[in-house]
Length: 129
Length: 129
DNA sequence: CATTTATTACGAAAGATTTCGTATAAAAAA
DNA sequence: TTTTTTATACGAAATCTTTCGTAATAAATG
Image (cartoon, rainbow over all chains, first blue to last red; front, side, top):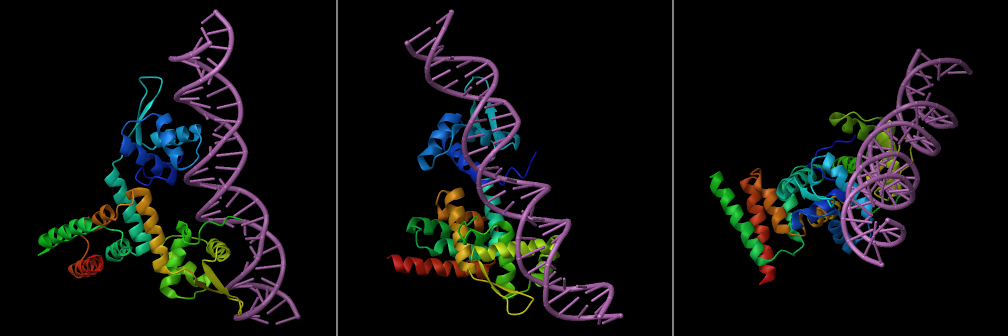
């Protein structure tokens, strides 16, 4: 079987993880219905991806009732970090500055969020000097 | 044929694009040698990916001499933007703040770079108020 | 000129991911 | 109890990506 890192979810897996992170433990039916709000996808397709995710230890399954309950094992922030690090290396040559400036450049970040980023930078500077 | 967006390069394509962005117009041989500094990959593999990239209009080819010269058509910053936007949506639910804080959080960004980011934020704030 | 080397073209295998059809069984409804 | 609905399991098809083998040919070398 294919066993890539559990922190590098495929697109379909990430789509499901986002549902699980938001909703907590969920049934296949619920997950599939939420996915179908954005795009058409068959029930057994969703089930199959979840079963693969279980093999990769991305999710755990409660089989105590007939309708299984799926829960994410890997954490949202950890997964984000892995995906971001990967993009940082593969597309930005490791320059976090370039990446951050690209991310902020589109002008969609609110003043409140900018303030929070400024605070983080202050903190980082404090630790540095 | 398969014609996904030319701004969503696959991993192998991105690896080659990075060489082209750095080196400018290059021969297959040069590209392949640079790739082989990091990992083993056959000459015809590199050639094939380049030919696919030409079909997707990611690169253009000068065939005036027998040894073809490949040049990137899509721009580095545009491609970075597309990949980042995609990650922003798919993994960070659209929150640039979360993404930026995750990117800066690892403490690898220098004071000079932090200063540049602060300046960008000032600029953004200027445009906002 | 003959042989070796370098280059491109291209099909197809190999690998990975996504999708679905079908079988089976449990639960619910009639 | 019989029928219908709902759920899981699982193989396999479909699609996409990466890799390579082989053929054809041009260029370089002996």
